[in-house]
Length: 380
Image (cartoon, rainbow, N blue to C red; front, side):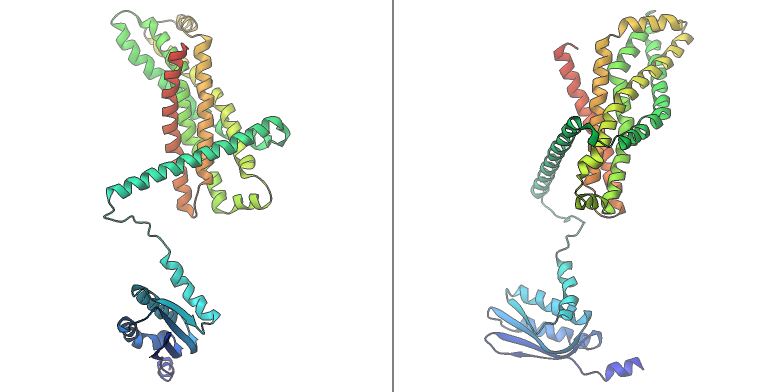
């Protein structure tokens, strides 16, 4: 019954009229049943017609047009564009324009797959441009949250201290079990491996100096920062990224609230406050693990801690805690930045989380190397 009714419908008629300007006139119905039989002929007619400048597609006599008819019109636009012809629609209704717009929008979509034969020079330019955009975004974000932090110092009542304490609890107190495990194992392994080498010279007692200085100056802050990046930095990026996908960040902006002050400042303050405390806790747990190993080598625990107190000074402790605070600032800021840069969709949240962890760890290693050179020249 449906096929019989479709067969009774009037066919699509078309003709070319001389100009100027030349016109391609359509009449009848442009739907899925009438467009198919004439598709190839219409495109062939447009391809062999010599067009001087402009061609008018006259749709004044079109009684009905659906998506199939709009697809034919869009194919005509593409075919005529190859001839450098200007196409102008006449008699196009809002309905026809609504069917035609999605096809035009699809032409502007860039494929996610890169060109297979892209020259290396073009890839190099794109890579340099991406690095430049990333550096610019990082510098702009540093300026934004620095301004927000200065306002927080000037007007402390404007800081959302409740959220800051909540983030500090999640990033600090709830991280104690994993920090305890890693710090204890690190102290045990470092002491055991060092004691085996020192035992050949009868200098096992100096393992206390090696472990204490390594933990306080380097390994304690570094290990804490990596754990903070993998645990809290990823959580910051995922939380803000989910808010970005759900349009909650845009809602804050619409309500006149600064997302940096509202979302970023509490997390950065929590990261700066929590990181030194976690580093100090990791140092103590690492020393306890090393002390247990030294007891098995015949060194009393009292002798071990006396040796540690003589080897470690306030400068070693202060430099390590300062590095930990800087690492906490890096982890929190990178996590928040990646969250604010999240695109659309669930996959974008995953990419932002991964990027936050990787970027934070790379920055931690780079900054740690800079601190090593700086402390060497300062004699710290």
